[in-house]
Image 1 (cartoon, rainbow, N blue to C red):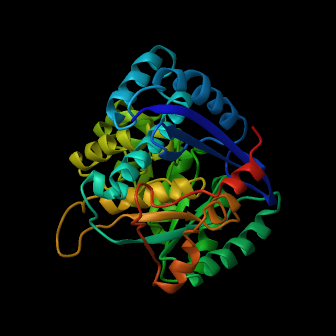
Image 2: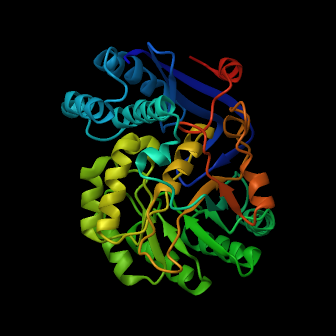
Length: 387
């Protein structure tokens, strides 16, 4: 079997309302899908992390840089292809967009491999440690409104997400340390006895992160995500040593080499790798092994279309318990509760995550069809493709 073509589909649409996080507001939603075709009629699908113009730049890398390197190769030679691309791009980007682009291609190759043998990806990895996974719902995005309006909305939205059946919820911060503490207090009221987590998207200095983190200790937050810049490894180590709330992060890190630095630094309690960015499934499995070798639990970062969700469900199924036991620590599926047609309407048979959560006590089933276990609707892709 040989790879005959690699196509990149950047989908974009207007959102029902503008939303934001600590770095920016956005009014359009983007998804970047990768389609790999073979001479035996098998097609694989993957996804590259990166919104807006980043997706357009990644499309060029996928089609004009990576594709010429690998067309004609056997798609089952996933590790050979990964290292060929990485080695040829090493001088031009060991992190960032080249690796995001490689991620989408690699995921598509795993999809092909599963289809070639008629097995879901979790079987190729080594089997399912679980047939379903608990999901947490996040929302509570920033808007161009007053602090008081944020507080009222966050309280109601937190309660609503827990009311949907999700086991926990996650909020955004980014209005400033004092205002953010008030937002966290509002969410704590809204969730009642349920868990809540806080995602700062690296907006604080270390001292401001300590200020917010000490409030989170008192409020019982489960984790404090990306409190400071991802480059500040010393700051992460200081926060983890000085706070009693779990410190999480890693979505902005790439490959085993970047993750080795994070894990050896002992600056996070929970690792959050992003498979659509760090190098695809091939590299994700190496990062997972590194994390578990450092006894650091993993809860994958999930953002994107239904392809990204399906990819993560396969990986969560195959993730070993860490540590083992009668009641081991278990991973969760991250689920964005805001409107996302590229997740909810992309597939010929939707995953229907929110309905599963409501119906199954907060749990989501692992797809068992070959490869990713899902197929995109080509007419839908054509409708929303911008390039």
